[in-house]
Length: 280
Image (cartoon, rainbow, N blue to C red):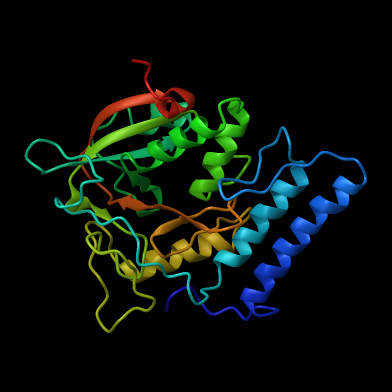
């Protein structure tokens, strides 16, 4: 079953509206007391320099709680399809490999990716990726509209958009060439060629390369995301949960590289360099 049933305390639509009303009211109340607080925009909830840490914590914890419950309207039909006809992807010359990107801590890259040519054969050590250049386009647009953003603010906005914990450390973007046959969506149906995920398992459990039992794998992702601290706002719907955007929680389309997948490193760049438009 898609995201195990949890009975919310109040209807989630009302819960969401109330949460953001409280947030907006809080801005007004603080402003009335002469305290400067960030403006809430569709692009982001502002970063550490402007936002108290407890606000960031509350936003994240709310996101984890919200993501654990499937609500009407959350299963979008705008996922990025991995097909040769999609002009928003980067393929090699013979269309046998696609460029994907993962955001890593430098030490993790040096230990787990750089020395190897295959992903781990362990199901609990898979690499989560997005299809290039979607996340690069996002962070370049962010810097274009926030040219004075600090490194901390840039990293926080990326963590928000990718559904990552605010205290986790990431230093570099790593681009990899992989076969699309070795990619799958972390959905009930792992098909990467369509634009929407199913909400329930059918009678036949999908087969995924080098995953012994996909239903068990998916179930483990749920428990790992919502029953272990600090929790992760995993949607299970093929997109990252953007916990920094009050207008839409839909982030980027996400994929997983199957265990024991061959890869070639294309490039590795520090976060800000990857997000900066090259000077001509």
